[in-house]
Image (cartoon, rainbow, N blue to C red; front, top):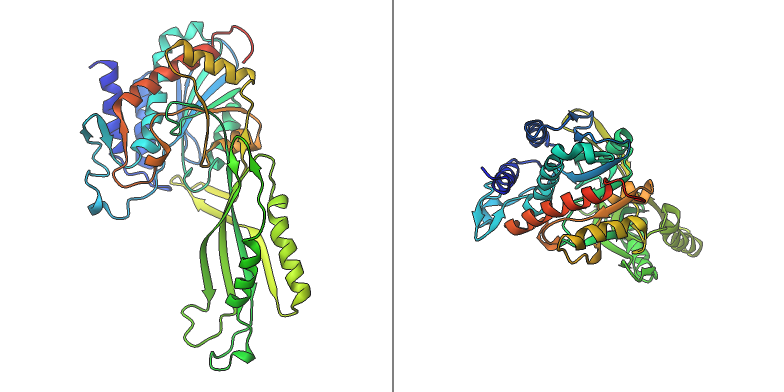
Length: 394
């Protein structure tokens, strides 16, 4: 079987494995087995369940190609026209959950690394490929464990980018706000303090917060995503607590303190105006168990990041793409990726380059164009050769 057909077949197989966040065991085993069959020099699964493979070159530096193994779930499979775990090919497209986000890119990375196995004596460094867990819930947290083990010089993230070179993204934070009241029978509201009504006052003020904007990445966003009152259902009881969650899209340089300060200032002002007003705001903290029994714990604050187009490593990647027939168009991700860890928190040179389109992620009848898989495979090889040729600055 020719290499291109083998790659497409493996993409079909990996898409057929259900790997919702927290249940990546089977897909992790499949990836490690694939790496072993492709003669990676080292492969292992770490304590969190990330899969890592190494092609060893002649040098100490490491280039990491990285993608996540987990997917969002399939709530109503009966509404799909194509089997979400069929990996079926129709009209030049592979259909299935994770086809676009982002199992096909990850498999292309694995094959690209293996393609350079026979040229390893010419590689001035190592190729690492990693499939990480729980990205859909904790962007970059599991990736941090991979970075600790590999200490890469450059990270390439394979999230969908329409074969454009992404050099930045907005980050993401989850902000939780609580207002406290006093319960009472709803027939006697004067005896209580309605926490929902207090929240309504606060929300109107929050809507007026002026958020920053970035010429490259666009505006910061703060969007209400859920609201809960307690007790629920009320059953003739004035709610004594109201909790809301905001999804806050972050720009580079924003911190927890700078993001929370405008809300805290509003709360302080309302407290001064109303002695019955009680509220607090925090970044959400959460934890989850991985399929290995490992535990991921994190505050849901994943920073934004961006690089200049004239950065040497960006220009080097562009050169590799253009010399191999790609447009080499610069872009950025509109969503949050594992780059929040590598670039946003650690300052490791990070690029995004992947097949398919952002708007095909998490949708019904998700698919990827087969031609995109072949092209991104070719691009990964070109980029790896450029960075590992040993001819100058990264």
